[in-house]
Amino acid sequence: MNEPSTKPRFTGRAVESAINKIGAVNRPKDEIDEARGALEAVRSEAASTPRDEFYMPRDRMGALVQSAMAERLGQPAPEELGPDFLFSDGDPGWASVLPSLIERWLTVNAPFRTHESHRVDFDLPDKAGVALFSDWGTGRPAADQVMREIVKGNPDIAIHLGDIYYSGQEHEVVRRFLDHFPGTNGAGAPMRRFALNGNHEMYSGGRGYFDVVLAAMEQEASYFCLSNANWRLIGLDTAYKDKVLADPQMQWLNALLAVPDGRKTILLSHHQAFSLFEEVDPRGLYEQVRPLLEAGKIHAWFWGHEHNHVVFRLRAGMAARCIGHGAIPYFSPNADFSARTFPDLKPAFVNRRRRPDTLQGVNGFAMLRFDGPELMVDYIDEDGTVTRTEDMNLVLSGVSV
Ligand SMILES: [Fe+2]
Image (cartoon, rainbow, N blue to C red):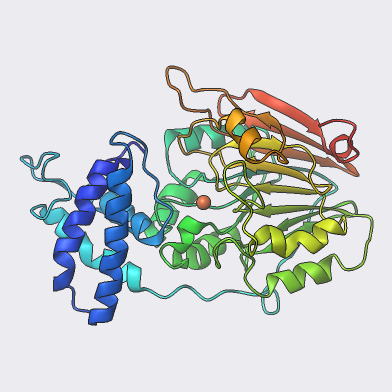
């Protein structure tokens, strides 16, 4: 992903050019004004980002601009067209992709699919390997390296926790996600695939995710439950409505967990319930799920979104793990900062391994090994290094962290 689209100065130029040309787009004035306002917000964000820093905007227009830039880069460029013209008013390739950028901005979201009319329940074998990885839909070499390690572990099931870049458009979900995600493991056995929704999928209205990805995964809805006699793995959609559970997921979850049946429940979602970097939103995901947590009904929760690998100490009786380090370049969090700002959040482990010759952290994933009531979790980096192994029952009983 070392493309100009991830550099703030190129994004700034592209946005400037889009603002200059948006008046020529044939749409109602209020729509154009709204799009111009969003472009101006991206321009100021890009301008305030350090010039050579990796730039990953977390808003719809910023992501759509990056998708349009990548689309323009896929077109042949005249020999004389150097960096000074790339994405500028005078770049003919850029001008050709601008109308689709605005079109995407104005597209309404794909319809949400519910368990009332779609299949969401699946079997989890009693003995099963399940790979969890997140923020991986980049098509980068690091993503391929992570996938090679996943496949090597011969999982029965592999679940992506969301984010296909830049904005999850139909051609992006093919080129940056499906083309890199095989349906068989290293033993040549079928690897059942699932994919959760992420904010980047929704930046283009979720059509690539709902129409293309779900069909490829043979998955009917964006939330689901995999269960056996001992465990439940529940995938949630926290992106259709940003950072909360869109209806009717909460009702479904409550009904699923209403009667204690001895099974342990592991949630999977793109967004985090809490963070080393942000306050808990009083109207957000954590608050939605809090009654279930306080009732001791949630035992573990794996999420991504934040590009780090953090294992938290038990909180509200739950083992929380951030595995958003699937493919995006990132820098390890500063432990002193988090300890100062959120003293009640105690990371038991933060992956601080760096890629050779750079300050950037290594990418990786989690491999869950279910065996009856037992669950072992390995955290594996892109080079195959196992950075941590945990026995989930010992973690949940407080014997180990
Ligand atoms: Fe995300």
